[in-house]
Image (cartoon, rainbow, N blue to C red):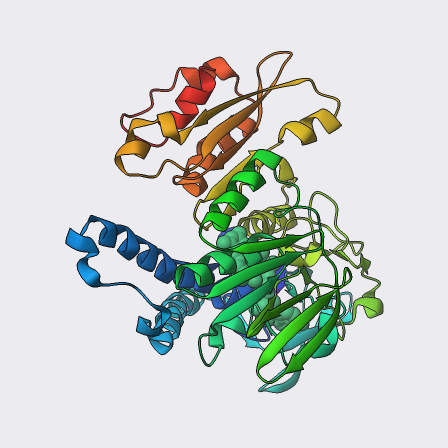
Length: 454
Ligand SMILES: Cc1cc2nc3c(=O)[nH]c(=O)nc-3n(C[C@H](O)[C@H](O)[C@H](O)COP(=O)(O)OP(=O)(O)OC[C@H]3O[C@@H](n4cnc5c(N)ncnc54)[C@H](O)[C@@H]3O)c2cc1C
């Protein structure tokens, strides 16, 4: 008899788990309460990149204008942008991808249930949806319920009057100014997009720096690039009060100063929402960070796994996918563990950021003596020829034996280049191994080659 496995949630954690389980011979059902494809496809990675691409086209247009005779007389203004078309383009991208995902499930003969699942026993959920309340039995379950935007105080009391990373994609009109709350990846990507299309942007961050956990060289480079383009940062500042009046929204800070904008986008983290899911019924342990799992993705209940954002380990789509595959393989008899050290962390703004493994401070905190080597794009032929000279490639080595411990790249196609270095970290390659690779000329990857020579 094939194992009966139920997957809850069809985001990048859930759907790869379902596909892998099917491939390995399980009888698979997947239940989805909202849109197929989860946050990633509908309100996250994909729509934000469609928006960013629009911003990048405006950025490129401005670059072209500089080359035209007399500046060509065509100056981009936000009024030139058809906001409804920008939104329609993103909706079109989502529909295409969602449709192919749904077709894939049909083709693979994976049962799809619509509605919200709640555990009603260690081997049973009740799915409440268009078909009423239906009970479904399983041998194993993979919980992949994702997260929702968090609204810390004082923003919490103004949830419906402010926007967040879910609702920003449907703003009825383009605001003239946006205050973004949160200097993490999500906040910075929206800051980059709105700034590119001519919206006045400020970023408020409670911590002393943006991109928590990133190397200070990286955050300095990103901040300085954004600031040159007019983005204002308010770091280490705490909001005390919100005032909304006459179409303006004001945040009063604890230091007494005020920040005002037409729109406030709260991008201050995400949290699992597990209310009403019967967690207590089956004794599934969870806390503020999410569902507790071990490195095999197994929860406190021996036949239930939890993958992706819901376990709070790494709120990234590719982490969710790897965890989903690991849970599937472990259910089918393997014993695989998730390795957070080889997860690439990317920012898809400009300059792009890609980092993997340990940075200097993280390695030193582990008691390691490290050496770092950095090469700036300013010295790379391709970067100079394409006027993409902002940024650098930096490698972190174990001083004892030159093993690659981590890498940080700012600028260029950092989100693509970082994979070579993820491989180096995974395989524990040494500096000399990476030097033996031949780097095509002229490419931005030559920055890695240059850094290795330092
Ligand atoms: C604006 C934005 C941009 C982002 N950009 C990136 C990026 O560029 N790269 C990246 O790696 N990550 C990015 N992320 C993060 C990424 O979207 C998440 O890490 C990823 O979606 C997590 O996948 P998941 O499967 O765990 O959860 P989700 O994608 O959130 O999927 C969970 C699904 O479960 C469903 N569900 C929940 N409860 C139930 C229930 N009881 N019954 C049935 N169904 C249920 C939900 O409706 C949802 O569809 C971004 C996030 C945001 C908000």
